[in-house]
Image (tube, rainbow, N blue to C red):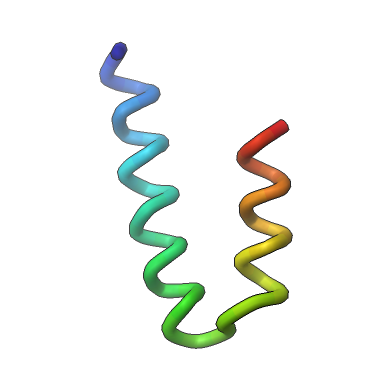
Length: 37
């Protein structure tokens, strides 16, 4: 895995944790859709 992708995944995981803490479902779903395209 190249470093850029690893950083993206790490950033996504961090954002996901923050999102789940503050806005459990709707924002997480939008974020997930954006990343899975």
